[in-house]
Structure formats: C-alpha cells, structure tokens
View 1: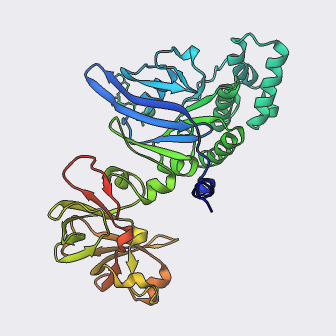
View 2: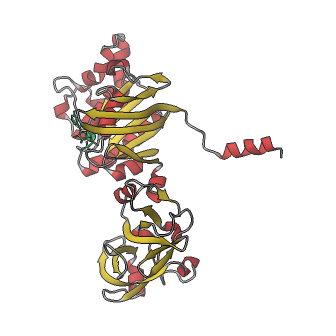
View 3: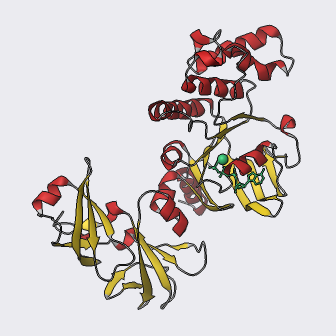
Length: 386
Ligand SMILES: Nc1ncnc2c1ncn2[C@@H]1O[C@H](COP(=O)(O)OP(=O)(O)OP(=O)(O)O)[C@@H](O)[C@H]1O
Ligand SMILES: [Mg+2]
C-alpha cells in the first residue's frame, strides 16, 4: 500500500468529524463586580446533543442565555452556522428554547400555544395549521390540541413547550433543566423520549442540567462546569473514566480520594504503602491526591486467575459491610490512607465466599490503570494520565 492509501484507510476508521455548528470563544460574563463566566470556549457539532453539567450557580443558565442573546456576554464571541451572532438580539437568532417551568400561555389552547411562534412569521393559516398538527403528533398529543395547559399533566405541558420551540424549525434547541420540575418516573420517561426525538430530528441541542445521570445518559458530549469555567468537555465515557480534574472526579459518580506523594519516578507513596501509577506523573516529591472508583477496587480472591492481582496489593481492615441490593459496599481502613475510609464495591457471593465481616483483614488491589492522580497545589490542575 502507498503511504497515501494507508492514510486514506486510517481516515476511514475515524468517526466522521462533525462540522462545528455553535462556536463559543472566550466568553466572559460579569454582573457588576461578579464574574459568572470566565473565558468559556467550546464547540457544538451540527446535530450534536450537548449537556452543560455543573453544580448550582456555576454559570450554566448564564451561558445558555448568552447563546440565546437573552443576556449578552461582557466579552468573547459566539458563532452559529458560521454567522457571528455575538451582538444580535434574540429575535434575530435562530433557536427555540424550553425552560424548567412550562411557561405556556394558560389562556391559549395547546394548538394556539404551538402556533404562537409561527404566527409572528406571517405563515399562511393552512400551513400553520398543518405544522401544528404535525408537532402535536410528534410529541404524542394528537388528541389533546383543543385543551388548555391546566387540563394536562406537567410532563405533557413540557412536551407542548418542546413542540412550541420546535415549530419554526430552528437550527438550535436550547433547554434549561426541562425535566427537573417533573416527578422521577415521568422524568425518566421523558428523558428517553426527548433523546429519541432529538436523534430523529437531528437538531443541534444544548441542554442545561445539574443531574449527572441525565447528562451521562442523554448527551453525545458533556461540558462540565464549575464556578464560571469549563472543567472538561468529553463524551460521557471520557468524563466518567478519565475525569480531567479533581473537581470532575469528585462531581461525577462515586470516587475514593486519598493523599499521597510521588516518589521513585512513577510511584505514589501513601504512607508506607507504595503504589505503581504508570507514566506521565508529576515529579518526585510532589503531593498528590489519588483517586479510584469503588467498582475498580479489586478484592483479592475474587478471581484467582487474573493477573492484576499481583499489582498494588494493600491489606486493609473491613469496617462496614452494607447490603445495597444489587451489590455490597465495603468500607475499608488502613492507617496510611487519609482522609477517609476506602469504599469498595463487591457482591453478596464474594462476601460470603471470602467470609468478609467487620474487623477482619481483606486484601485489595488498586489497579494502576484505574488510579487517577491529581496534583495538589494548583487549583484545577490537570490530571496525569496513568
Ligand atoms: N442577573 C444576575 N445578576 C447578578 N448575578 C447573577 C445574575 N444571574 C446570575 N447571576 C449569578 O451568576 C452565577 C451563575 O448563575 P447561573 O444562573 O448561570 O447558575 P446555574 O449554573 O444555572 O445554576 P442553577 O443550577 O442553580 O440553575 C450565580 O452565582 C448567580 O447568582
Ligand atoms: Mg440555571
């Protein structure tokens, strides 16, 4: 094969690159002295479903409102479909938006609510009518068009809000916690429905949420935010498996943290315990926080034939054994592990087979490829791949 042919063959293996549809560059937002967004940059591909995820007050809504033009950024630029929209008012932008509260007009029927955005566009009556029926059908409310918002459930109201946002066929859908006012069951159901609808329509979508399950299960990519900055952008698997910062490691899923120090060029010393932690570590003497998920802590004896058992073995003491239905949570202690107990996930079978009970020693392995190492000093310091 020629070099060119090899290149072509390799290129064919890559997933098709999505062209960036929405480009946010270095956006800062100040409210008087308070800086709500600090130089945020990100790209959303055409047809992509992106979630902004982060704790309350981190700036998710502020960023969404800047993208919509409802609250223009103090500095930085926003491009949509190649057009600089940074300074445009909302009515000159091309988006549909759904908020947490349904925000339907109570005195209008569902049909009239959905038609609202179309009537401003001077569409012919018959075309509006046909479009409204199409959207009612799309969100599964075909038989309910004559009703008023107060006559339908919260989940149904949110579907109408979505239909209203979709009606003018905008290039971008913005959703600010659209499911969080709903009860758990409706919420789960609507989560799937919304995801399927988005995939079917292929409309570029940005959804704000502070619910990590929602973000991980729905998004193509997740933007994790914290106090006005983007901590990490990645697929749900990347965010979960390789959290780039300590904040992300702590915010997403369950994680054990313990203090250590780099030594011998590639080891993490936790008191007397020496753990191998792969390559790309900070220099010797640097204080670090090591992190490992409970499901990655291996109990020695679980599978006598696997090779990971030889590495990073630590003898710990069983403090608590908690039965949690699908699994058993073990809390383990070791005099060198600070600040807290190490939590390991196990099964009923294993606990029985190994006779794991409080007070007894248990040997675990902390596989080096599952250990994440974060430098302690600089706030928001990046992770070192191990
Ligand atoms: N109009 C405003 N005037 C002053 N401060 C504001 C204004 N809007 C937002 N803020 C502040 O900016 C920060 C970010 O707010 P934002 O609403 O974007 O947070 P959020 O991530 O959406 O939080 P939540 O999950 O609670 O909705 C908060 O500290 C908030 O108090
Ligand atoms: Mg918000």
